[in-house]
Length: 247
Image (tube, rainbow, N blue to C red; front, side, top):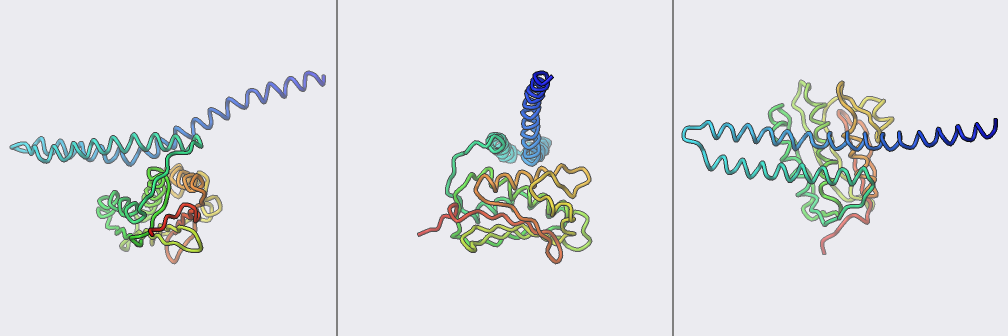
């Protein structure tokens, strides 16, 4: 009887491990699919722009060339996101580089400027020009991109003019980046589970916050959620070792 119990336990453990591997693979696939949504949307927008230029009489060749250059950049960005997000979920360390924080954050704001303006939402960036950090740029871009997308979604039904503020500063030996909005803020359930698959969207998965938290941890930092007056505030803290100061 005892031998049978041990055999049953061993068999159960042997069956559970493949399930865990499948679960990890499922989460990895979900994260990659989630992160590809933005570059794929850019691809579709540029394809529409190319079709518009081709319908012109005469055809706007300069416009087509410009759009195809953008399409090539979109494809390259999608490829980079797949590779770097897969490395993230596999806990593989990627190559780190010296990053200008202002350029990183302004680039993020520019990527979202058009949909934000369409919804009557403003995006502002506040960051010193000499602040730099060492990290995986593609992964760090996913952090702020996801936080801005979440903020834009929270503001989509706002009656007053929406505003998203991205701010970076160095404080107490840390690089501190905040993404704040003047929307309704986080519900208590999300604040209680910031690094998990929590979401305020009816059809959301919570993967945006999960990816952001995982990237922060991979860089030795952390993610913090809070409510302002009004709105939501997400803070990304990276340790002193990642901050690069210009001499």
